[in-house]
Image (cartoon, rainbow, N blue to C red):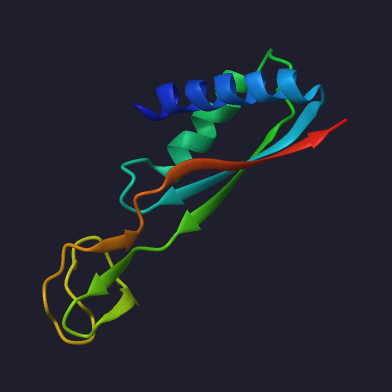
Length: 114
């Protein structure tokens, strides 16, 4: 369960930023792509476990799921893909390896109360 090590890393990052900002962190905002290799539910569970007994025990983890989008060189357009098993263009059927989004695992914002 690598989600546990990811949750620990997020917690360390948030603790560091809270100390620098001098406030209480109310929420951590994370972008999570379908190809990130992280199971959302497992990450939420791991985060809830590692935050217990820390100054961040009440911090909420807000996850924005990022859709899987690929660029098709034939259509010359970006298209959302229906599933990770179908990495071809949903319009023309051409196979593409140009993934535009869907790999994200990124803390992009913190809500800090001063």
